[in-house]
Image (cartoon, rainbow, N blue to C red):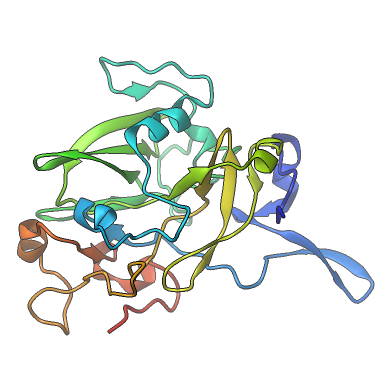
Amino acid sequence: MPIYQGLSTKNKAEIIINSQPMQKVYVGDRLVWQKPSGIFYPEYGLLYNWYAATDVRNIAAEGWHVPTLAEAMILGSYTGAIYDDEEGYYPTGSEKYKEVGCGEDYHWYCSPPIAHTNELGFNARGSGFRTNIGFEQIKQTAHFICEDGVDTYNILFYVEATTDYFYVAITFKCNGNSIRLVRPATSEELALLDGTYVDNYIGNDGKTYLAVKIGSQVWLACNLAETLYRDGSIIPWHGADPANYFTNAEWAALTTAGCCAYDNTLSNVAAGFTFPT
């Protein structure tokens, strides 16, 4: 059942290459590490507003869902950190969720570089976010939507390049942020080491993603780039002009579902990515 059973802290470095899980395969009579075939490897994935994440048509395939605040708090506390209610963060531990590497050639940028260990295989990348005035903080922050919301606000959790904090915060529902889907670990998965990659997640549009067991939860091991709801309808990605992406004004005015690529650049989603029409 598990694809990469046993990716513990002590042996993860030897089989994580450029932050991508590898598997042993035979090439002739030689055993080598290779990236598993058929897996979708996004660059930063798509950014979604809260309305897209919580639409009744369901952005997640059966058995999965957008995380709740409670599930985000479980993830943040898993490293043993104690939540600071006044500051709104867990003061340590986010380095264990962030992809290794920090600099111009990586998905995080900070100078001087600081250590990201990615010990739990969450592979957080600095995917940035979108506000009513534009795109911000690529390679600096990674914001993840929670389903909890009230009025014009919703909950998110996020990590950033330059600290080990794991934040839980409030943002506007119209803002564009990343999504990591989650589900409970099965009884069989609970016995696995944390950081073990288990059965893949297959999205509504057919993309296959890695999934990782962390504590009692299984999370997507990369950002979502879903383009369809469960009923097959397209998640809106353009405004009044179907040939162009949402303008900042259109994005800010949304009270219904919308998604976008960071900076409206499709290569920021994934190599060769296109929206459905």
